[in-house]
Image (cartoon, rainbow, N blue to C red; front, side, top):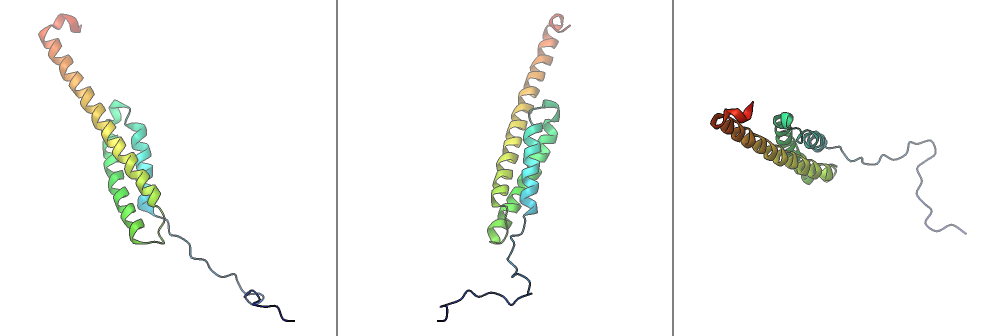
Length: 121
């Protein structure tokens, strides 16, 4: 008796068949890294400007990475692009909020020192 439908094996000594590998998405990875660094730095008022810049650049890369992942099904990185976008926008929002808060308080302090210099010494 012959076995029915034997499994199709390549001839002996031939290399295994190549599987299609998903391409990495450099823009998505860059967005995520910049977003992480931006979120870490945004809590430090002196480095708020750096975090605003990193958040802005990370958002641009996040949008590019998301568009690349959506256009090409073989391209990985959709999740990384989304994470990069969220982190970058979070870094932007927190940095701007802290910068505005610190700036308003400095202006109020300067104005109060001009009115009553005895309290500022």
